[in-house]
Length: 127
Image (cartoon, rainbow, N blue to C red; front, side, top):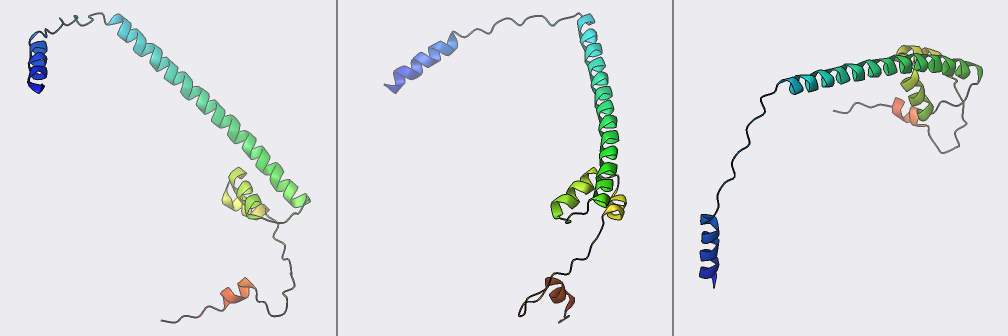
């Protein structure tokens, strides 16, 4: 059974004739025009991206200044999320750290409990 399949497949392969290849396009005018259009589109995209970046930077500076002013006038608890938000919107880390109002909050520790800072302060070097 497999011999007849092989024979039929070989006969099919013997009948195969490759198709004639089409000639290559010789006109360079359309290719250069496509190159020019794509180059102009790339330049336009870069200009738009630059304009958006400048606009975003200017609005981020204004919003960071407003955020630092609101922090000074409206002191809230400093959380990790609010610190990350201020760092993301700030001009630099130094400016953000200078604008954060650090308030020490004395939280009474219950008897029998210890604070994490107290434990971290008791560093023992055992080698």
